[in-house]
Length: 212
Image (tube, rainbow, N blue to C red; front, side, top):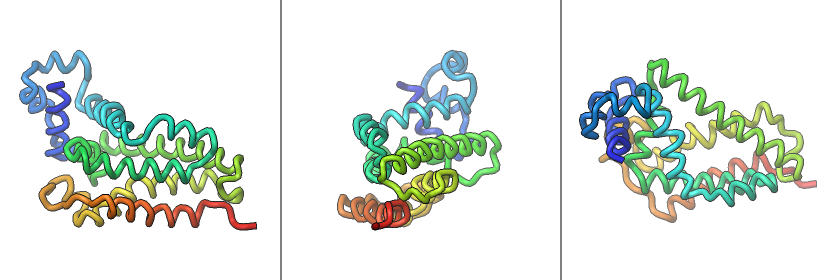
């Protein structure tokens, strides 16, 4: 638990390229050898923090049941609404962990971070493609949509582009959120619902089947 908290603080407070495992182990009060028993390097620790720990915490806001039902029925739009709202509330409820995870989206020349960001987006595209193809088979999405084209668009619209839009609603930018957290303000429940409704209106108009 100590290394998790230390990693959240370090990756949240510093750009990925300058985050230090030396500071992490010092803050956690453990030796570097102890850390290497679990994580072979900085990128392995950060991958675990984002793709396992943060994903697990975020999963409390989007139930496995909701995901399973959406996948079974092809209800991509319904799932996106639940997932989007859950992601926003997660960010507001867990600002330190969210900041650390959002370092993945920061502008950086760091090659390792670039590879992780690309891998993250590709995973999102694969999930969206499964949903799009199932939704089309179930009559929930426009059958004329090209899954190969629309899947990366949805992944970006509900990923990096959504983060940017959320930062605007919070009165800041991604850079401000990451490096000057005192500048942003928490959204109210009404603002969260209005934000999600606005994004979903755009997606629904582009993805839903056209009236006969």
